[in-house]
Length: 377
Ligand code: SF4
Image (tube, helix red, strand yellow):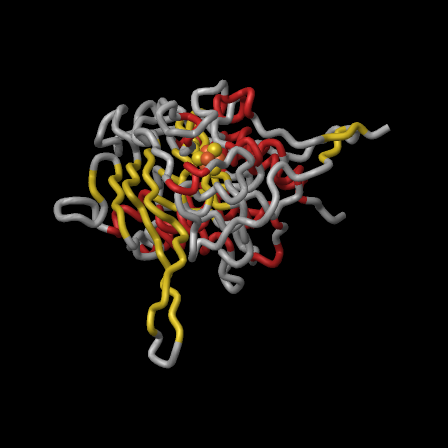
């Protein structure tokens, strides 16, 4: 009899006792786990025989925020807005053009700060493509044990720890440990990737579209697993996805990106119920409904995002925003204190009564972008 994925994964993952406190916590409860300050990544555009630089793609541009201990920060935005580049910068998988990171009070790669090796031990990532993250020639138990082995843990101890992790993510080590990636389904492979990411006992997991490639029912199982692991292993998540419903399900706070910048950040309940930035309103208005009688007739904002190699002046959203006025192209909107995790901020002149925008100070709910709908007969 052939077995389906649910035969293997419907059993709840076995977890150890809930840790009372985290001995790795050095900065104290109030210290954000990660402070991101003025982060930027500009990719040079070169041409000609000598590769002369003629510009730069500003994939991430002056981004600042904090990640609190134990929270899930959801990151949303259209394709090309800089979400995945931001994830790789947070992991320090690529050099920064500018900015710096502070992990639990310690500056990363600074004199008397955390070394890159120590930092990467604390921050791990799960990618969208579950197949390419695994070595096709390595049994999965060795894939999970690979990180600890690289940190000089003995083979037997690393394999024992890997078996325990497979159990934690709902895969029986006896049944799956010796299998190769091609013998697993997409959901099982993503569970292995989560186990692999947990092998070095990180404190921060960056999940970049981690469930986007999975069928809905399998994605739901993996999301529940992530919630379960977070509670029991004192984890903090950055959850990146284009799926607003999934982000809402998992996140405590939401960060919205547009053309390499943060345009809105705040508690998830506030951002979803009362979005302040017209771009966030448009994203929410374009969410597809499960109600077959509700049809969106027209996209709430039209056109493609401008090129990050040549972003518009002033507010970067002014070329698509229905509330755009001359001041929007002339002056970049102010953004409040992004280091204060309690407040709900938007990078828009409408939220600043002194900005000079004719509608500034109006009730934002009266200006909310909605998608024109029809009801199916
Ligand atoms: Fe729209 Fe102007 Fe606000 Fe930008 S600053 S989002 S163009 S109203």
